[in-house]
Image (tube, rainbow over all chains, first blue to last red; front, side):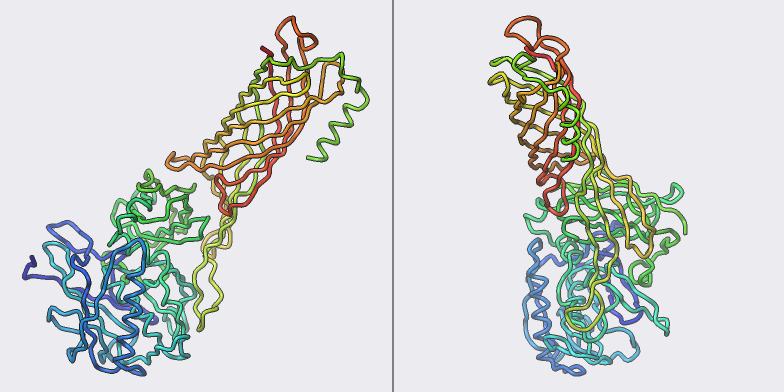
Length: 330
Length: 227
């Protein structure tokens, strides 16, 4: 049952700079407690707005969204299903109890490729409506191998559908500042990284381990709970917890990279749904994207990249003992 | 190892003698020894954390986030061995050992952090082996050389004791027994002596991030007693 005072939120994927977002998973405050915002009813039905975009048609958008939903649905350790309902004349905004995906003219958002907005039941944390828009300010493409100078629509759709499912942004990526001050991605380890790859690139059509782990954490399959493990710990500086530290777990056997953040003032973190095995832990300040792409509250970025002194095992079906990682100020 | 065996042969050659009258195993009798083993270190794999590069097309070169080279450090072990002589020169042996090696990790190629060696984790390692020991028909006084070959089971437990990894070990080597007492007849006091082994071990599986066969040398010194 829904409450009347449902909350809304918007998530944006940007080029060059980012806007608002959260962390690995989106949270909803329910009775003073933060719970995961997820869909409780599936399949998740969606409408495609019948307006053409810049360089692509509404039919192209439908095809790109179908491929992107199939990609998320194919994650073996998670249970998500989508269903195309119909084309619609309605734009992808407003509150109409429909999940609508389409193009919008948003010249004011000159660095935003697309965005997702939500209606969340504040009594349960259940998402009951979400819309995704793609900004007609940008020239899109659905060419199988990409098209130089055009943004790959399927890649952006895959990212936005991740938000629609309840995922926040991942920080597994590296950026550099361009002459204009905008950030350019030089390496990305997640489709959910907040800054898009360059136009013409199609590699964001493929989910990465971090994306799959996040989805599995939100919608775990029965086997995922038994066949994965977690690592828990705490990041401290001068004996105090560090909020907003980014922890990357590297499996030295598979090369898998999965990350998460310390989410409270105690500096505690949990990295869930890891393939079982030992991991090297690297802690870094959140300085490769704007912190407000991830957190609304202030975070600590004044510390050096630090490694956990030893590997930590994510045991099958359980979690590691807590490990403390001490960082030093820059 | 070849160099070490050659050295051992050079030491023994001047004093070699026929072994018929020297110390020998007692067929049907057991021999128990307690050893201190020192095993060399070996690599267990390198991992490069790579991010997808940002360039049009599907072949953009990856971005290296870091490189980690892992290595099991040299460690000492305690070993208990039981052998039963089949003939005066051949014995079958079973052994169990426990060691606590560390896995150290060397970090490099991290643009935001210096090259560094992480202390690593301490493993609990158990080896259960079986093999054949052949006492060579040569001796130097009360010292008799032997060669040995065998294999066994490896079990390695990570520091948090939440994950055990298993594998196999195969070894070949040689050494010598020096009888402090007995060993020359079917009766008399229980034989007592010291034994030294030098082995090359081939390790398969266990903790290894590349699932590759690894080799390492080990040496041991034991006090044995015949039953």
